[in-house]
Structures are given as C-alpha cells and as structure tokens.
Image 1 (cartoon, rainbow, N blue to C red):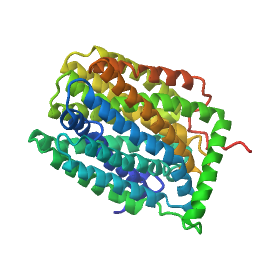
Image 2: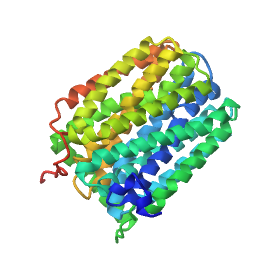
Image 3: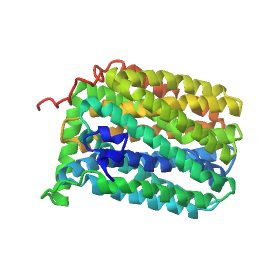
Image 4: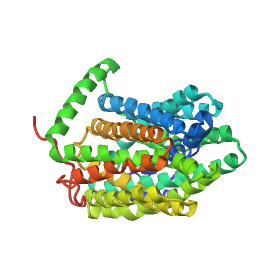
Length: 427
C-alpha cells in the first residue's frame, strides 16, 4: 500500500506505521465493544450467572477487578523489560494472541458454568489490557509532542469506528440467539485488523540483552521509574487524578450494559443499539476535542470532560425510560473518547525520551489499579442493596469529583503546540 493511498494518514511522517497503529485501536475496540462493554458482560451476568439479587453484577465485578489487578502489577515490570530488550512489538503480539484465544473460547461457555466463564473473562481481559501498554508506548515514537494530541484523538476516533463495526457484525447473530457465533466473529475481526500493526509498526530494536539480564534491569528500571514519578510533582498529581477518574470511566463502561439490562429491561439487541449510539457520539467527541487537546492543553480537556461525567452519572440515577437512557448514553459517549485521548496525550508530554515503555507501564498501573476498586464497589453495593443498580451507579460519582479536585492542582498539561517532552530531574 503506497503512502498516498493512506489518507488521512499521509500527513504524518510515517503514514503506514501511523495507519497500522490506528487500525490496532480499531481491532481491539471490536473486542472492547462486544465483550466487556455489552454482549458478554450482560450475557455472563444474566444468563451464565443468573439471579435477581445482584449476583451477576458481583461475579462480573470480581472478574474485572482480578483482570485489572493482574495487569496493574505486571505492567510496569513488563514495560521496563520491553524497553531493555526492545521487544515492544513481540509483547504486543503475544498479549493480543492471548486475548484472541480467550475471546474465541467464550463461545464454549454454557449457562451455569460460572467459574469457567470467569476464568476465560480474566484471560481475555489480561491479553487485551496488557497489549494496550505496548500499543500506547508507540505514541511518542510516531509523532512529535506538538501533534501527539491529534494522533491520540485520531487513534481513538478510528477505534470507535471499530466498535461500531464489531457491534454491527454481532447484531444479526445476537438477534438470532447465536451468542457463541458472535464471540467467534469478534475474535476473527480482532485478529484481522491487528495484522497491519504486526506488519507495519516499527520493528523491535536489536539488543544484546538476554531475557534474564532484561528482567533484572527491568526490576531496577521499574523502581527507578517509581522514584522519578515521585520526584516529578506534576506527573505524580496527574497519575493520582487519573487513577481516580479513570476508575469511574471504566466502571461505567463495564456495568452500563448490565444496568440497562437488569434495571430498564433492555433486550440484548437493544444493548447493541445503545452502544452503537455511544460509539457514534464517541467518534464525534474524540474528533472534536483532538485539536483543542493540543491548542488548549490536555488538562483543560480532561477537566471539561470530568464535569460532563459528573452530570452523566447523576442523570443515570434518575433514568426511568429507554429513550432517556439513549440520550444519557450519547452524552457519555461524547466525553468518553475525548477524556481517554486527552489523558494519553497528557501522559505522553511528561515521559522522558527512551523510557516510554516504563512510564506507560505505570500509566497502565494507575488505570488498571483504579479499575480494581470501582467494579468491586459497584458489585458490593449491588448485592448489599438487593440488586439496586441505581445506588451502585451513584457510588462511583466520588471518583470523578476526587479526580477533578486533584487535577486542578497539577501545574502541567498546558498547550502542547510549543512544548517538548518533560525531562526527568537529575537524581
């Protein structure tokens, strides 16, 4: 494929690599939309687990929390090893294969197979979330700091288009009750759109480090990165804020389908239409906020989106009709892509050159650690209140408020059109 055929990617220094990077977002978004966000989440909670007292939400919350805990504790170490060995692409491919296998095997889970479905949910989630660490680490290598906000937004925009395609492909299968086939098709689409990244992303560096040497250096690098983060006040405050507000975002994503299904009586096909609506609005939101992320700064965009999320969660508590839920979902969608893209760009401006894997590993650590607490709280509130998912949803409001409060104190994240990468202070 020639570069001039890659519009709108031809404006970038390496259009083929940028296009493949964006299409990986397309690929993993197929999984994200169908598995944890809509069909599998609701199917596991409602059909595999069953019950009306919040049991499904509790088991799903446990699966999400365990997944995020495992990814959280391994991401910084894995990122450090990737930087030492130069194995960024190899690890991206390896984790993706794990996600593909887990997704395809979901087709073998039958009603009542709670533990088996739980294990496969965790396996697929670890592969999906783990791969994102190495995928994110490519961002600083593909474009200079003054354009990272736009590229990050473009990646998320392409990703939300992938979510739409995945849901559209699953819709006729779900309508016919062929849930197993829907999960297999999801795995096939995930694999197909991952191939450009496997082929065209920059190759791994050639190094002389053995795996053992890299592992030892990885541990040392991990602790050094932790110390560097503690010393860099803006980075420390941003990551703390991100840990809190991303918890809220992830919890909304993981439980929105279960809420709609069990509280408002949505059919499985209704969930697909809702999430399609979310993807369209998210695509628009990511595109509209991409340039302001550079010109006004990622901090401005994140704070604006946190105000919007506070409004969304409050409205969810009062929703009583399917139509109103569609409207609230669309509002949430416009803030979803924007806050994710701006957060990634914010982090990229604070990373020292050559240490992207380590720092994005800690970025993943914060995001995934946050997603350990929120789903647990949601599930516990649901079971303690006899299945009241409205109160469970309202309980996550505190994460958005706390995150915004801390981010207001961070003196970073301004316009990036004339700033470079922030260096690490000397030891």
